[in-house]
Amino acid sequence: MAYARDPLSVEYDGQAAELLDRLYQNNRMPANALAFVASPPGDPGDNVPGSRLTQHERAYVRSLYWSIKQRRPRRSLRLAWGELTPGGRILRVTMFSRISGRRHAEAQPARSYAERPELRSTVAAEGAQ
Image 1 (tube, rainbow, N blue to C red):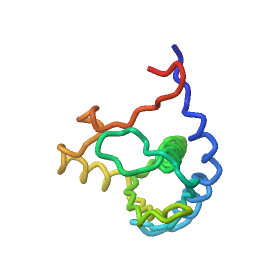
Image 2 (cartoon, rainbow, N blue to C red):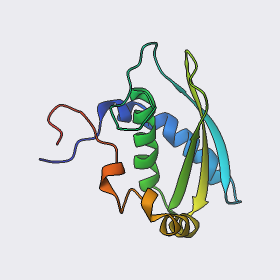
Image 3 (tube, one colour):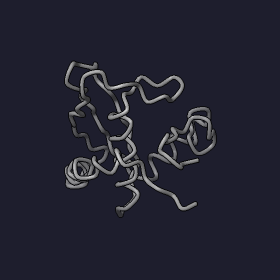
């Protein structure tokens, strides 16, 4: 079966692209930008063990990482979430050069999504496996 993106993530592509545009315009690394990720009242958790993100927040993260893979030069991201409010949550995104991100990941293999597939989030979309 062909890969299908999470439909909720696709809805965030425009916002993710705007945030990445701001980060890429900064000539200095690391670059920082803030985003507000809205979550509707009662938005359930994302069903990822150990995660505290809502489904909409997880969808935004998926969109952000999907969008950055489409760009050149390649960059690495670090996300820092603020406190959850009734309307959503502030997200601070820091962008690093690709080599800087690689060095950081290599220094912390226990936290690597590439080395530890169980840390990756999964999509509970219909028909997805």
